[in-house]
Amino acid sequence: MQAVDSKKEKLDANQIVVIAAQNTKSPYPSTTVLGMLLKEAQAPGVSLLRYGNTLYIIHPNPNKKSTGSFRALNADTAENFLQSGYEFVKDAYEKGFDVLQTSFQDESILNIFRTISKNPPQEGMGYSVRRTKSDGFHVMLKLGPARMEGQLQ
Image (tube, rainbow, N blue to C red; front, side, top):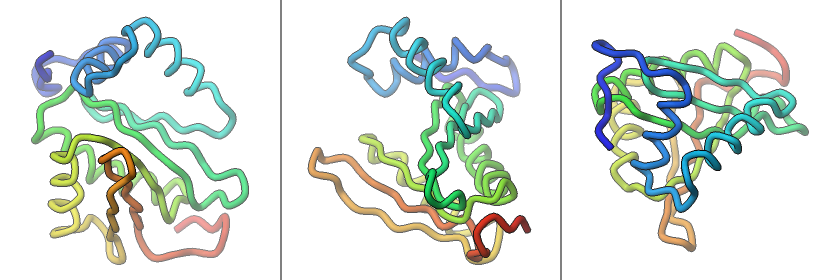
């Protein structure tokens, strides 16, 4: 399914999830993906951030709140997705996260990390990537300088 330029049309959250599931070739029907997302978004401590037609879901580590995992559900154009990545990094750091990790299958997503790291939105930002056993990718994203646990910038 085609991306929808959020500068021209704002999708509702359900539409974003359906398009993202189709674009990532999810093996699950869209109704299942929607149900899973709703349950996931209601989990304790989860943050849901939206930029245009992209949703970011952050799960804090229960043992160390400054770390967590995230995933992006994108139904926007590549240019807008890249811009949302910049905003996401700044906002997640502002929320108190120093390090986030994510896993994905689509190698083209690495270009977003590469591009943002060439002109990071804040000092101290960087990432590392490794291949997973299932030929996917695991990224560890350092959002900025490490802070003491629970300290906001």
